[in-house]
Amino acid sequence: MPENRPFAPMRRTAAAALAVALTLALTLTGCGTQTLSPASVRGDAGGDGEGRYGSVDCAEAKCVALTFDAGPGKDTPRLLDILKEKKVPATFFLLGRNHVLAHPETVRRIADEGHEVANHTWSHGILTDLDRDAIREELARTQDAIAEITGRKPTLMRPPQGRTNDDVGDISRELGLSQVLWSATAKDYSTTDSALIERRILDDASADGIILLHDIYDGTVPAVPGIIEKLKKRGFTFVTVPQLFAPAVPKPGEVYRP
Image (cartoon, rainbow, N blue to C red; front, top):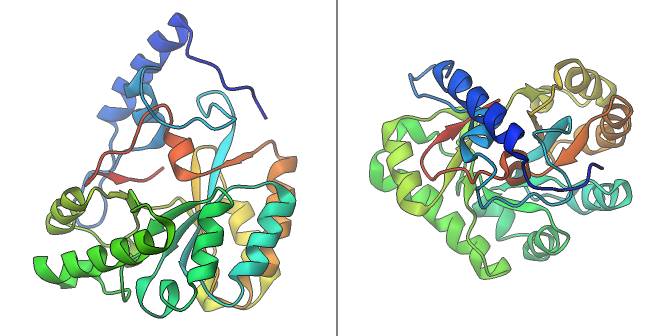
């Protein structure tokens, strides 16, 4: 993987120009919420941010973030074995009830093996259908449950179905959570066909992309080795979501989408 190194002055100038252009090109979600791309926030940091590079600079490398929602589940240990074998970091957006509470050792292993542990609510409630107190409970209970196991509260969350609004943003900001959407999904909740899951991801994967999969469905984990191998052959480098944004740090409450 490319060696981590600071931005040179010329790269700072180019990055700043890119940031301006991309900031002007912010897209809107279906609910009218502004979203920010990884490239725009990297450029805005200007090389002076405090984000965690890890071993790759995504301003130069062809990065992609592999993310898994709604676990951990029975297949997550096998997934972790695959990721360890392939030397691929991932980001896990975990559900609290029936998942974090049911699989504390797997949660601990996810953190111990260097993956990013993130929040996917307590019960997968659609946050835009809830009042502010209920939104807070969905997120805060999962924050506390994860922190009790790993010693650290997540800084990222993914709203179920990607649905967010101003109330969700306000509560996320209050709890120190940035909102992370995605650019490629296999809709693996609708099929057990691992070959189809693999093909859908390969068709939609892109530089600076965020891949959405679920480690709780039968067809998903078997598709992961092929996804990793084929994307590596295309020159992709796998990173966690925070590494995708480095040297910037995603801001609580903001919504990020490639």
